[in-house]
Structure formats: structure tokens, C-alpha cells
Length: 215
Image (cartoon, rainbow, N blue to C red; front, side, top):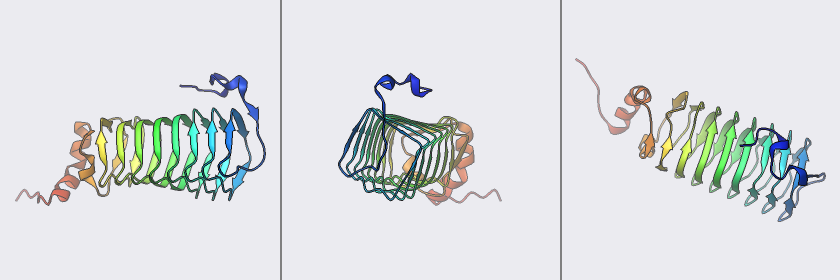
């Protein structure tokens, strides 16, 4: 995976872009460097082979936007509507996603590295071949989502929910913390370590209505 902007196969094609994002607009090989996009209405916009560096997106509406072969470095997405958006072949490094509506989003071949996700709604989303590497996930809701070949190496999961989710080849063994307040039945199909099983045993027992009593 690319580590620097210059490593991108389309780096030599990138052109600086300024100005607001617009609804249903197509952005191709654009470089968004710095700046704050607050309150933009860009639903249905398409970003192809674009790079985002140090960008802040605040209280924006990007429903049904499409991000294909994009690279994001040190970007902040706060209180933004990304519901039904599509992300494919994308890399996100050192980013913040807080207060995000991402329900029914489509995420495919996406790598998030050293990112923070706080209060992110991914209910009914579809995730395929997604990697959360060294990330912090807090109050992230995967309820009713479909996760296939998703992994969390080095990531901390706190108050993360999987209620009603459908998991296939989801690897949780690399997670450094696994705090799941409810929805444990949604873990069917996940891989966990024996240590994680021991730590989650009381919650599994409670979910199953099993009383554990030694005397």
C-alpha cells in the first residue's frame, strides 16, 4: 500500500484543486491539499484517483458520494453525512471520523491506518476486504452490516456493536481491545483468540442467559 503521496500510481497526474465541492460533480485526479469544507452539499459527487491531504470536512452532506482509488492523509471528517456512499480501493492514513452517518455505505478494498473513529454509524453497511490497522474505534455501530474478510490488526474496539451483523472471515484476533457492550450474537462467523474468548466469556454467558455460579 502507498505510504507517501509520491507512491501513488497516479501521483504525476494530480492537479491542485480549490473551491467548494458540488452536488453530482465528478473530480478526477484532483489534489485537495488543506482547507476546510464546511457545510458543503455534494451528494452524489464522484472522486476518482484523487488525493486528500490535511483536509477538514465539517457538517457536510456527501450522501451517495463515490470515492474510487483515493488516498487520504491526516484528514478530519466531523458531523458529516456519508450515508450510502461508496469507497473502493482507498487508503486512509491518520484520519479522524467523528459523528459520521455512514449507514448503508459500501466499503470495498479499503485500508484505514492509524485512524480514529468515534460515534460512527455503519448500520446496514457492506464491508468487503477492509483493514482497520492500528485504529481506535469508539462507539462504532456495525448493526445489521455485512462484513466479509475484515480485520482489525493492532486496533482498539471500545463500545463497538455487531448486533444483527453478518460476518464472514472477520478476524478480530489482532485487536488489542475488544469491548462489545451488546450484540454478541452478531459475532457468529468471526475469528477470535482464546484470550479474547476468556475475556468475553461473561458477556457471552449473559447474552445466552447462562448463570455462572461456583457455589
